[in-house]
Length: 207
Image 1 (cartoon, rainbow, N blue to C red):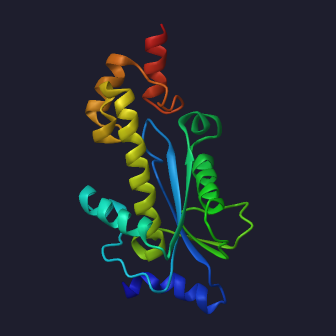
Image 2: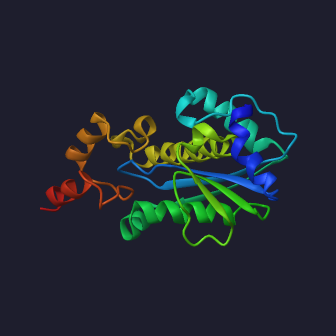
């Protein structure tokens, strides 16, 4: 826990107090939105198990997610950018957009942002890019859990609408099952049409 507070403590030493971690889920999938979360933990928040969301089992991640979002001293915001906007502006810009939305949705005004792996070029709030931030910062790890769990829930809902793709299992990532469904059925409305092999599948099914 202590080693994951280095960046926050350094920001505090520089005079910042409303420090927020930011991370995203869903840059790589072929379908669905990119989701970002911004998270601030009050000084009396002690939730065990906060770690990079990719290191947690789905069951454990859900438990930690619930503990975070139900805690009165955890402040968070979520930004969601859909597949059409990803196709329009590209995935990097869509991720930045989702991160800025997440900050805007915070119930408090942050004064410093710790961001996983990205620079926020037009942010009015000072920010710091941290490579592998979800492993190195408690705030970013908390944000990664909120982003991942929120996105998984969205993909589970999409599965009910388009069950043939298996979104409930792979969440839109390019697994073999997803590739086979894409070949058989063609893309659905939440597929990212600028991503391969969706782009090729679109051409095949349009001809």
